[in-house]
Image (tube, rainbow, N blue to C red; front, side, top):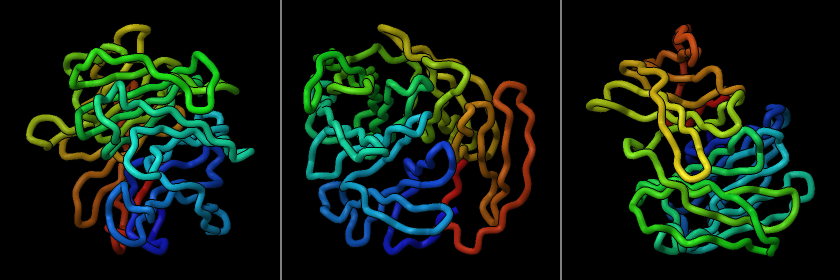
Length: 276
């Protein structure tokens, strides 16, 4: 659980390393906005609490093997995705503006596929979803052209060396903008997503399978009066809350739908966030 770290911050895209030693998040110490030079991508040691500025950016996502940190670049207005080698600090980037149809990314969230070579980006402003795949080496990668659809699903790979590239994939027709996205450990080509259904009175969990040319969506679980906070690293369980004063913290097995949990007391929930 993170609390007050020197400024306003968001848990959208809150990310831990697989070994649980570090957590990454965006800190906004002055005023809100992606164009603000104060948009800071921070690393915090869970053991010592030591805080370090890594880059200007937001929406961090750590690869399943702990080797890469992906994030949306915060250096001015651009549709740029960056991937940092956590061992060396070397960073590669790709601009996906051709696929989005504009040179900015607003309120995005990122997730990795289990194989650790492909990255997924969801962009709320225009209801778009993006993944990345490298083909030709280069300092900033290359991008294929998009079909111009409103909802974008873009496949982006992260090779060990070379540049990043991006190409469009046809999204599911019933796809809704997810609130939470996670890796599904046993399925290398799929993600877990959660969103609100009905009048926002229940949470639904879906499996999003990324095919070669098209993606498919399958409903797995529905929980009434709940908000999903995240999925565990194995992709077998989810963490969610029910109620507000105080909230109930629960977990659920995605496959057999077994629910278990307990009340969680948080003195100031506006300054705290919870994640696996």
